[in-house]
Length: 348
Image 1 (cartoon, helix red, strand yellow):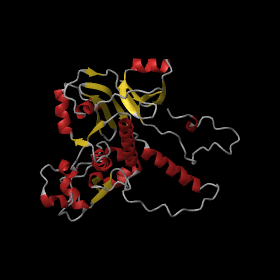
Image 2: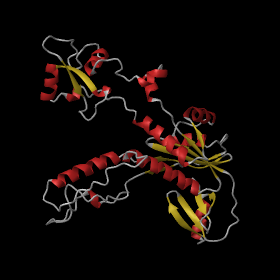
Image 3: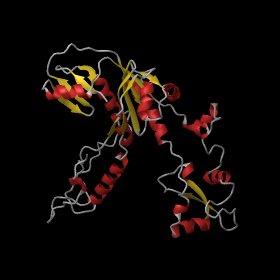
Image 4: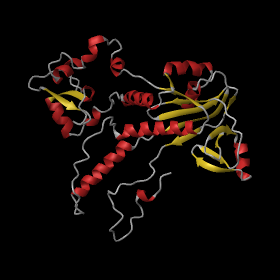
């Protein structure tokens, strides 16, 4: 991977080799500007040689591939791993705060002005990934002269994934269309058999709808059809795991890709956008294996590779600092210091 360079006025120049950057730093002609990605700043005037540089971005729900190319050379390539702990951390904070209300602690006035959601609001877990993706794109393009930005996005029709033959008015007819109620839908889906004992209807032992993953998940693929006695048994004996073996289909990644596509269209109106089927063919033409950064190389528009960096970078997004004041074991107000708390260790 080459080293990014900016001049003494803070404007980007063409990247240089690691050897040249090391010599400039050793001779005192440059200083380290930032570490991620590694960038040096010149301390003397330069002619500012520039050429057209392309930045390929392979967007994803969990990983983002980045590649910087010009002509037939790959200057930098790597993968950025986005955070996936936002929802879990918010749930922990909610539990801590709820427990705090039941303890004898300082009274806190309720606040009711933070309930309304602004236009364009997104769940925090999705907003974090969108912000991080945009932040890294801006960071790389700001370190290159005359960058040409090419982004791969995805467009998913979730209803067509479920039913490839769907068309027209069928989009307005949901999974339970023309069924009288949920039991009638489940009877048709399961062919009139209990999902626990696999037996048909029994007189005096009617049907019950069971929520496999709890009532907070109330979608058709979260329901199970059970006999009345089987429903009582599954709760009394804790046999929920029998129905939880087969996990339901998840379209979270598809929904995220639809969201970030619109966000990137608005954020980068001058960028060129491409799709996965084009990237697949371009990557095969370049004879590259399937990785996020190799997809980004193909996205950048390079046709032949004469020079390719051997060392891809890898960045993992982490929480910078824990700012929550609500803990299960508080540090203040104790007779002995809480030295074993995870909070004491810095994130790396």
